[in-house]
Image 1 (cartoon, helix red, strand yellow):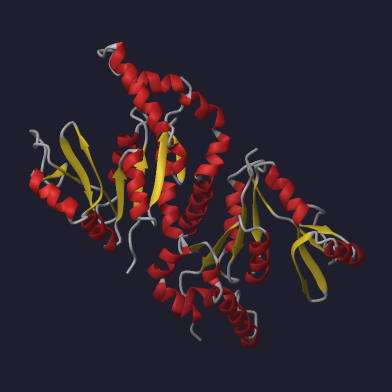
Image 2 (image 1 turned 180 degrees about the horizontal axis):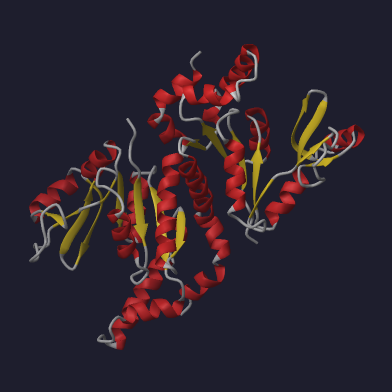
Length: 207
Length: 207
């Protein structure tokens, strides 16, 4: 059985990560690639749907899953838990579907340790000016908030060299093309191609 | 300094390897990627040019180069020597240019050993029928000659699993796209991107 690949994707806020992942998944059927859906203890917001934005669970349930070591990684943010379910990811991968995990460097580290066969991609903005511009948003935030965002972005960027691949998101279409090239190439690796083309190969080698 | 990647490309006769490499190089400037030119002791044929098809050398000169360990690999075929010059390949790679080496599994093995940072790609035909059809050529050869070719092709195919990547040449454009995806992906690897974008990265990380 051909297994899918788990892709870890990280970037500082303002690098265009979410738009890239969305654009990528739009071009591919869900039986081919999917984005990972996290578990969370935070309340469902209007317009959100179970299993589409998150899997919504109680704090008790979340803690039970932690105790069972069901999470590849989890974190507490502003009093709410967020986690990535290992059995869920493994079920999807076992169907030959690639899974994308949008996560920060800390989560990436935990996942890399538990799933060493995963591939990790870091996305960078094209310049400091562009990063600042994107972090300033629509000009409605205080200098202090922008400085905090900048600080967090630089923190995230400082971990870029823990990743397998580095994409510079200067031209969006080119960055999307780069992301697709990585995915296609992973599928051309010997082990995956060998499994996928077993019948062809044994026929070619038969007398 | 960003170094180029050495690509080893092998395939059975009839898999479309040469057409793929030619089509690939046509889309790229020579300061970006080049095909490796072998040294040979065979005579120059009409229409061939020094440094374009081969570097033509005497048997004495070739043997001197062997003694100097100047070849990544060499072989004798029908009384003539053919070899891949290591200094020549390294000079091109050091300019940041990718080099393609069209070679059989035996040469590939020698090169892989001496240049472990190279990447190797094996190209397969889409089916046994198609392979036979391509090996039959224009129907002017004896059954015996075709059987010999077939035998040689199967021998070559039997080494497919010594390679990093496997491309099935069913649809030519798709196979070319696959080849390009591999090359693009190699350039997105952390070590290469890190060198290429040193200035950007230090600027992003500066206060």
